[in-house]
Image (tube, rainbow, N blue to C red):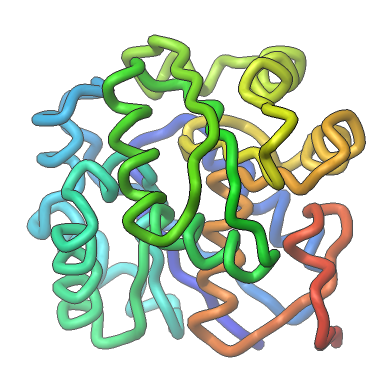
Length: 243
């Protein structure tokens, strides 16, 4: 059994995680601890506070009790707003506090794009435009070429959590660009686990979503690779280890 730990801010799309656990169809356990979201606002100062070391540390002890082997801060905006170096500092502090390998959703996107061998990406974000551009800057720092960025102007995670499957499909369509090798949908408040194959079929290219890459990143930290085509192209890479 491989136990994966996640720190998830507030309550929006956390039900993606048990769904992903089921779709993995392997000896993988997904343990999720909710952290205090503070002010629910896609605004830089609020996002930095949401991902502060103190807020993350508050959830670590509960994760230790689950036997988690790695921890991922399951929040994109609450990591990339710190910038490339600041986000590294954030996960280094989390790793020291937790006593286990650590990462965040922002780094998960960078690593997942590298895993797929894609460089040119399009971004479809729920965030206001200025915040979406900060994510694009983060991706560029990680070596990606961001060919288009679409923000949706949504202020709260609570509102994002109410988006329907059709809303997600519309965002992906609007964000796509003919030159993009993959479409990225950041925001762990967005329900996407059930629609990734539909997104990839419609767009004809890999689609990376926040909760999907977050779980993949935890598997990467624990040296596990699971074949789960229902979770998209990212989960069909070789070599395959399937129990």
